[in-house]
Image 1 (cartoon, one colour):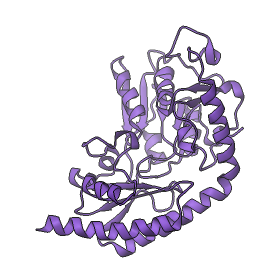
Image 2 (cartoon, rainbow, N blue to C red):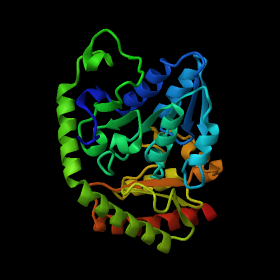
Image 3 (cartoon, rainbow, N blue to C red):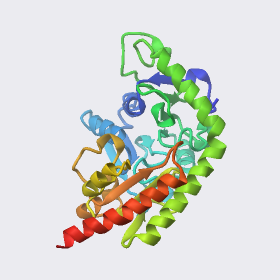
Length: 328
């Protein structure tokens, strides 16, 4: 009900990553020889980018769609890049690092008009924003349980009836012959309960988070010199705030924040240990040193105004201290 689809259009998997892999690789493996062009945005999650890279080994042409300085894909760019041999387009609903929302419904409508399959990674938006598959005009859509306070180790892929998909796990007929192996029944039940809770509170929780986020962004930008907001100023996740603090390496800042009991991150949550500059920030046109200065703050169900006031206080002190140290 949360996705607005039929039960047999949902395939339960182990994670959002597996869901995206099954969508990208599974759909691509069904492409005829004259339809082997794949389009995806330059700021997709690594599970989409890496799955597409893997397909290059099998003769697929993978093209990345550029984004503007806010991280949005333009509909005109998609229109220009679609070709007669394009088989699949994948654009995420919202970016996991910078929070920018994409015009997925319009992109989906264009893909449908051109006879191209369309995948949406909705891991970040599901449970926070309305995610109805018909409204988004998608054929494949990925979601994950732990992003909505459900159990880890379970996700799902919506597969519109009639969408071609080659199973990647074989040897059993589970999930309507789309994913072999014993289902994680306990995980699926936990996921269903998490969806029920998220959907029942979404209409009050999303505005609450957006209000806290806006006040936090204002406080940071007004009280910390050379701080800039990353991503779209308004078309963004209600729980995301991403900043660049000029001259402050994110690794130094994150260690100091951690000592003060504040959890933040640079890059995607699952690659935060990497020293590579974020591919998302590089795609916005940042240079390598700027991309090492980006920090993401995520608000959640338990975040309060007091938490954010404390975070702003700590940021003011810490940013000033790091800049002073580096100026010596």
